Amino acid sequence: MEAVNMDPGVMHFVDTMLCTDINAPVTGQLALDLMLSPPGPGDPSYNTFVHVRAKPKPQHLSLQPVTFCLLSQVLAVCLYPELLKESSFPVDVRQRAEKLLGACNGGSVGSYSASSCGIPQIQKSVAEFITRRDGGVARYLMVGQGPTQTGLLTPLPCPHTLPMLLDEVGVKLVPYQLLEERGWAIDLEELHRALKAARRHCEPRAIYISNPGNPTGHVQDLKTIEEVIRFAASERLVLLVEEVYQDSVFGQDKKFLSYKKVLFEMGASFSESVEMVSFHSISAGTMGECGLRGGYMEVINMDLLVKNFLTSMQGPSSPPVLPQLALEIMVNPPSPGDASYEVFTQEILQKVETLAQNAQRACEFLNAVPGMSCQPAMGGVFLYPRLHLPAEIIQERSGLRADVLYCKKLLEEEGVCLGPGSENGHDDENYHIRLCISAPTAVLEDVLKRLRSFHLWIQDRHH
Image (cartoon, rainbow, N blue to C red; front, side, top):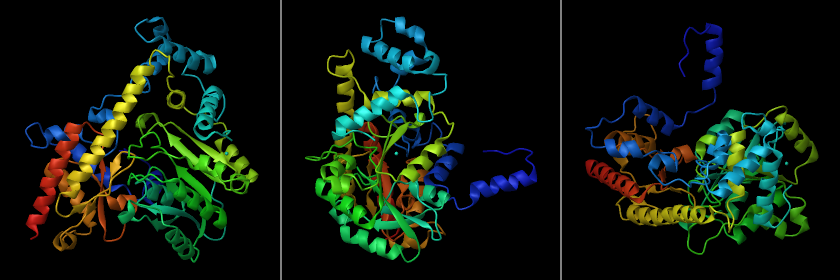
């Protein structure tokens, strides 16, 4: 943002808003520097730089988009209804677009949504999707205010945007460590330790779960989910469950289990009392539509006063229409017999197979590099390898964390932008990096080779 001729009083207010208690993500700062001074066509890293991004946006990495889900067909027709007459579009694409337009006020995506909760037809599709997935009827979180700061039990590592968000809204991050040596498993003793320690200085009110794990790629089994639910019930914690990679599970003998489904199968003593909010999004998984900013949350067993407050906060807001249309397609994809079903199914399978192949190849590759170790991913779009760095690079970091310095030099030397583990909440001396595997195999292979070359150079330089 560039501010020109701003009133000094306003400028001070803007500075305060933007700078107070908000730590800018390191990856973003590095990417901004590179954006302002990118590699030129003659530079060795130019070709890779053109393709590689730190954010898992498949389209940027030349992966074939999911045609039906990507809205290149359905949304094109919704944006330009004259295409309903165009026979080159599959009949189910035109039928879906016509149905969605009919659900919009005035038959146009340019209109306001009918309510602050969105288009009723799309709300209905979301509810039906949850019902199909969990076998139960879909049914509304706020952390309360009090004399002590509200705390959120948060896994480490956690999604890289979460620490900054919690800091911004004044919620205390209460870390609980995932067990790396056990494939980033949740440990019940660690949950109790973290909760007991936190209650000395804040009031923990909720626990955050990421399943499949972001950025670790772990997928929780039934036993783990039941243990976490029992823990939340006994400690009266709200469960906040991020499940945005639920359609991207590829580990052998692994399958996604929703917390809501497990909760409702544990009997009335849990299903009627445990407060839970689950989140899903079109930004992640096989959809990968980060720019559309669409998603939903399902709120279960929430206290009526909190539920009413949440509803009142939405006020007269009107959610953007296009993300809702994309959301409807995600939760209500083409069915067997539809004209687009075969193509859609093949595209989804190809994406998941590419993730599986990339995850296995990258994990094996990284574990063969001296000074690196990596737990296998079972789902999601990231690997989270550990760096065993020479003491010298840790000593020369000049005020930066060693993982940040590592990523900065990697970007400068090889044109590869990875995320330092400190963005994911790690503040100990176990250094990690975040590697996106949602890329064509050839591009990922080039990235891995550049990473190995750089890592060996770092090792040799300090021996």
